[in-house]
Structure formats: C-alpha cells, structure tokens
Image 1 (tube, rainbow, N blue to C red):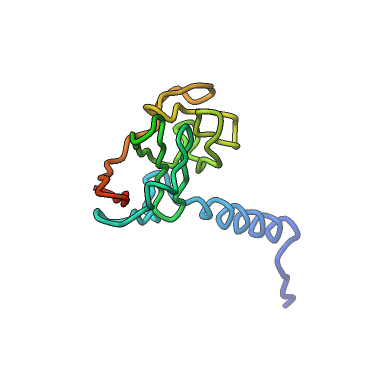
Image 2 (cartoon, one colour):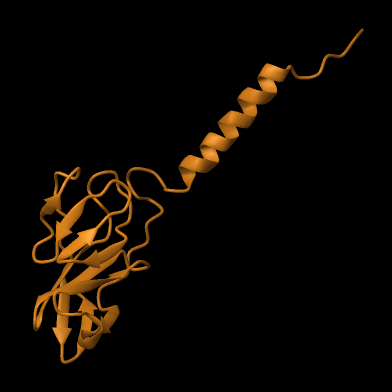
Length: 135
C-alpha cells in the first residue's frame, strides 16, 4: 500500500486560505468587535494641543478633535465612512483619509471631497478649563 502526500493544489489552496484569513483579520469584522473605545471622562488633550483651524487625531481613542474657530471644539470618529480606514491627517480645514482621498469638514464632519458620501459621526466631548474629555 502506497501513502500519497498532499497534492500541490491542496497545499496552495490551504496556504492561500490561511493568508487570506490573516490579512482580513487585521482590520476586524464589519461590526468592529475588536474596537475598544475610550470610556467617557477620558482626558484627550489640553485645549492648547488643538490648533485653531485644524485638529488632532487620537488613534487609540478612535476620535478626531478639531478647533474650527478659536475656543470652539468638535469631535468626530476617526474612521472614514467610505471603507472604514482610519483617517490620517487634519490639514487645510479638512480631516483627511489617505486610503481613497476622502476629506471631511473640521466644522461638522460633512463630506468635503468624495468618494465618501456620509459624514463622520460626531463624538461628544466636554471642555472644562483647559481639559478636553470624552463625554
């Protein structure tokens, strides 16, 4: 009786399936079950950390804080509504996603440049003295 090992095709299929699974799991599932959001009350920054007409991304807390006008602070999710990539920068009055070029207004999270068609979700923050916290 001769024992036959795995065929080349079965090895390639198994390797490809494993690579696909590892690659896809890097971003979590579509429900964001691997997402751990910061809890209310978490201090994000000092008001002096957020430039007027700009903003700052807090990657670990999954939020972007902006200051469209002096003393006016806004917060939005840091996940682009186009294909759920994290946004990469805040400049020129927009929150920018490098994945496909979407841009969002620092004033209200609305789409300033497609391909995104939905605004960034607003996050609640509180400003007490010089401290910006998640609400």
